[in-house]
Length: 212
Image 1 (tube, rainbow, N blue to C red):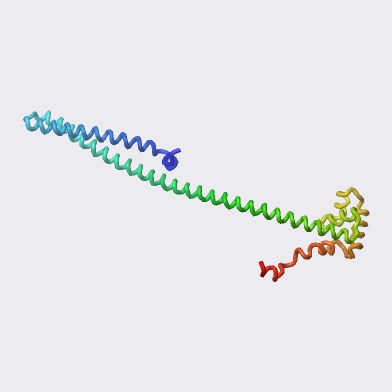
Image 2: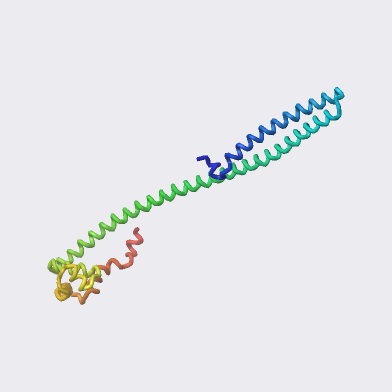
């Protein structure tokens, strides 16, 4: 689609009107020229006043039509130029928007790549943390059932929720939780969570931060 048409819906019509006005102006000028030459010839031959008057009116009419067409042609030309300027401005704006869109797509691609990289690194860290937690459970000599309960406790589940998930009674879950705390020599859920998460919440080591 032509960008001039986007800038103004009548651009094509104005171009057609301009061509038509040029044609009309040419015809009026031709009539004015021919009638004027004929009038001069009749004057030199001494033609009658009526005849000269009629030809004079024809010359004046052709002259008036020519001037009128010139005025309309100037208006139409100015309107066409204005529409072309609008089209150029719109073209520049569209080009800027296209560049902005390309830049946004590039930034989005970079962000997605960073997100994938972060997910990969986080996945590796979580694997390491999971392995460390499981290793500590082994050091405490927890049974498989106690390991499951301890892990669900770390995830923040209540005793009733753990019992429902494992399809056991609430009393059994509480008993297994107490066994975990006893074997780990911890007072309860808070100390169990702090045992594993405290190091994760510490601020960065100043030495490591300076080295990085």
